[in-house]
Length: 227
Ligand code: SF4
Ligand code: SF4
Image (tube, rainbow, N blue to C red; front, side, top):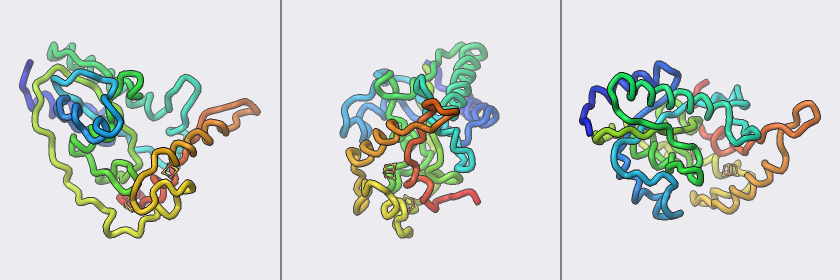
C-alpha cells in the first residue's frame, strides 16, 4: 500500500472541481465498529483495509427533483455523485496505479454506513434530526463513497460545534410522524412515512413517477441554511 497524503489532498481537490460540495476520508477499518454497525449489524461493504473517501452533494431545496427516487433505485443527485466517484477511481488507477472503486449506495447492495463515514471523515456531526449537519450546507447533503487501496491517513476533525443545543428543535416539532420525540429517532415511525411516500409517487403525465420522500426534518433545520 502507498502512504501518500498528497495524493489524498489532490483527490479531494479533484472531487470539489468535479462538483462535490464536501469531501473527506477515513480509514476503512473505522467502520467495522461504527455506531450503525453496533445498532444494526455489519454493513454490506466488508473490506476493512485501505481508505474510504466520502463525497457529499448539496441538495438545493429549490431543486427537489435532485432527491426524487426514480424507478431503478437512484436519484439524479446520487447519479451525479456516482459519476464523480467513478471519475476519481479512474484517475487514481490511471495516474497513480492505485486500485479504487465506487461503493454502492445502499447497505444491502454492498454499501457502507454513509452517515457514520461522513462523521468519521470530519464532514459534520449527527444532529437531533438524525442527519449529518455539515458546515456550509447543514443537513441538506447526500453522500456516496469510494474505496481506495491506500494506507489510511488520519481524517480531519470536524471544524464545527453541534448546533442543536442552541436550537428550538423545529425538526422535532414539525416531523409529521413524531419520529424525533425528545431527541430520540424512531426508525420505525420514520420508515412508516417512507413506506407511505412509496405508495404515493409523484404523478408524471398521469403515470407513476419518482418517489419524493419526506424531508421535513431536513428542510426545517436552520443550521447553515443557504438563504
Ligand atoms: S433543527 Fe435544530 S435541533 Fe434539529 S437538527 Fe437542526 S439544529 Fe439540531
Ligand atoms: S424524514 Fe420525515 S418522518 Fe422521518 S424523521 Fe424526518 S420529518 Fe420525520
